[in-house]
Length: 246
Image (cartoon, rainbow, N blue to C red; front, side, top):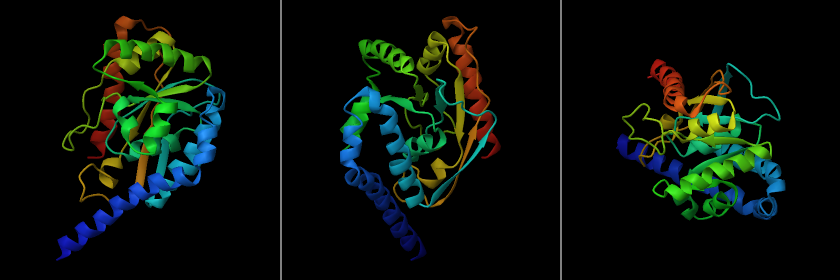
């Protein structure tokens, strides 16, 4: 009986998440739409997404971020932000962590999600990992966005790993782009998203969402041949922090 009640509560909690995702989009749809009509208004869209969408979802789910930083993100600077990927909360939490406008690079399949997908495909850099031409186009779009003074965010695992995996292997893309564009990498560890809202339906619950923003990794003196070394250095930083908390 207790398990049944627990499963019922977790099912309600999960349904409530989807309500919280959709509600701000519906309520603020005209404002969100207007700010996606031009790339020049992307900072305004980012502000809306961060303060009216992401915060509404996190606090509405009673998930309260607790951020510790080894180095602060400077206003007006461009970065490559990378984090472990464990939950649908990761997108909202990343928006909460950074006040500096950034653009997500993500899978084009997410554009099929109702409501969310409508804006996702308008403001994010989409990539089809099975299409070499798509991957090449991403580099051009990233450079274009960096020229506008924005940062880039990538989840380098390339997807959400099995729940038994602490941290999956990293893809090269984020690190190669950071080197080519000479921007610092900001390693970020999400410690509680998997516990608060994993992919398993009957699971999760409210609580603290701890985040660790690590010391940035400079890429100024690196070449493309250093990609794998850089990739593993950043992965080891995040893995070490995760391992301390498992």
